[in-house]
Length: 480
Image 1 (cartoon, rainbow, N blue to C red):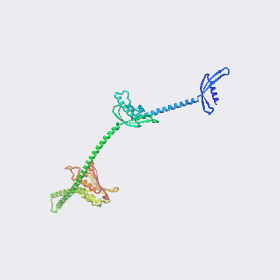
Image 2: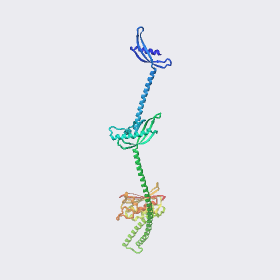
Image 3: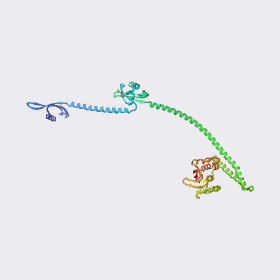
Image 4: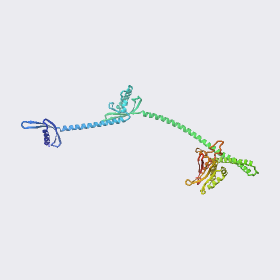
């Protein structure tokens, strides 16, 4: 094989131009069959006796070739390592520059080898800097160098301390927290010191604000405690006043009840004697005297109504209003109410309609209280309706187990803002001395309280100038 390879190389040489030529020839080691690289130097010579010939010199360059290839491979690896180191350095610089805190890397001698942009603003003098700015940067460098010198002579691998620097742009004091760490080689030798500087101005400001907030909170707490104590004292005073008011209210109610009873006794006697005189028990009464007696009787009965209303309010407030529960027919009750107000109905010349089903189920409640409420509602409707009609209706609601008794009129109506006021004690919408309607303002208040005693309620729907509907809603099974 070697002869063939050599012959092929010499044949190629013979075909070329004359002159010495250097090339590489790949041969085979006859011992182990491994490749051998030879440098072949051939030249054509002329011999007068034998003619032209080729003189060749072979030099074994196998080891040299292998060494060259190893050098090239190592060089390639070195270039790749350099590229990786540059990429890693660029990545490290990018990471360091992205950190907001200043970062400074110093070597074993304390000289700065790397810093990010925030650190450069502290320790690097900018172009066209004024003398005072240069002094600020030099002062920063001196303080930092002192800190690093202490780190280098210390045996600790990590050190945390505070450095008083200056803001290189404004000269404002800039207290920083320095966190430094040593980087050691595999043999424990110091190679670098990495220091991170954290600006503590924001933290100190937060601490100051927190202290102010804490002081304000403590002051507020003291004020709250003082106010709480004062409120407790006021509550105790109000509680005592409420007890006194309750006692005074009870005494007032008792006084009114007693006085109303004392008023009614002589008034009933006066009405009785007046009625007897009108009936001619004491002899014939001529026309003028009879008219005067009729006026006395009318005003007396009006006064008796007022006294009865005051007595009812007093008894309700004192909790002395009894309930007489019974089962009764609502149509009969409505008929009685209408019959009692028949004289007023005739004088009013209004159209009165009763819309109550005849087959309405009996109602279990206090008959006298329900009658009193209906009397008041119907008399009010007659009083405040000048023309039109008045309707008394009853509608059961089996689902809610209630009965609604309503009195609807076409009278003067009540404004929306006044619809709650009319249920207050002694409250009339027209309180002037020349008001056209009489009364004490207790009727609706008594009706609402009586309805509440019966576990019911009274509501009103009204529009000014178009009439009103007052509804009494009662449970069909009485009080729970």
